[in-house]
Amino acid sequence: MNLIRQAGEKQRELRRRISEALYALLVRSRFEAMDYRRNLWLALNQGAQRLGLGRKILEDMERRPLSYQDLIRQARMFGRRFMTFSRPGENVGLMLPNTNIAVISLFALWAGGRVVVLLNYIQGVVFLNSALVTARVQIIITSCRFLEKAKLIGLVEALSVRLVYLEDFKIGFRDWLVVFTWRGRPPWPQIQRL
Image 1 (cartoon, one colour):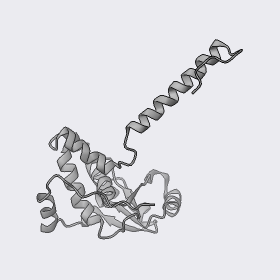
Image 2 (image 1 turned 45 degrees about the horizontal axis):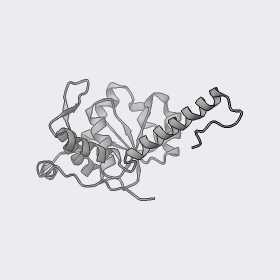
Image 3 (image 1 turned 90 degrees about the vertical axis):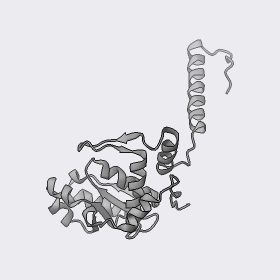
Image 4 (image 1 turned 135 degrees about the horizontal axis):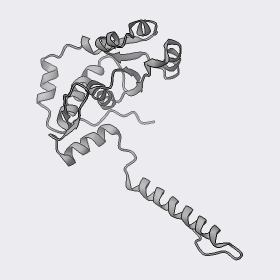
């Protein structure tokens, strides 16, 4: 960075050059101060450790607040279930309403090393099928209740992918055992290295 005034350089050009250099320095320092390798699952767990597991962080339209601990536990429970029908690194579609279960499902898939593809069902069958082919999505996680309320049953029946409904998950003893034996140290996400 040469911040010395060059011969014949106008004051305005010098100020512009200095401000660009300062901006570049601020951007670089901001980037270097952060751990860019940290994913959202790890950030959630670090936030829980720093701010407290009992801190309420999420509330949906149904007015059911979730704390860090609730979110992490439920994400682990659902993540365990999601691992049974998908592989690490696989693209999994998510078509859910803006509620707590959507966030829980996002973190559950991320914790299991799955790539989440959020689907915009408003675009219609043609664009949705095109997006699924482009993203190589073979599985969509959704909710029967949501599809009925939003009148999307005809839309999802026209898609050429496997549908997994959240209502089909039967929460059993092993799932609750995973939740209640949780010691505040969830496993590292299963990340595929490129």
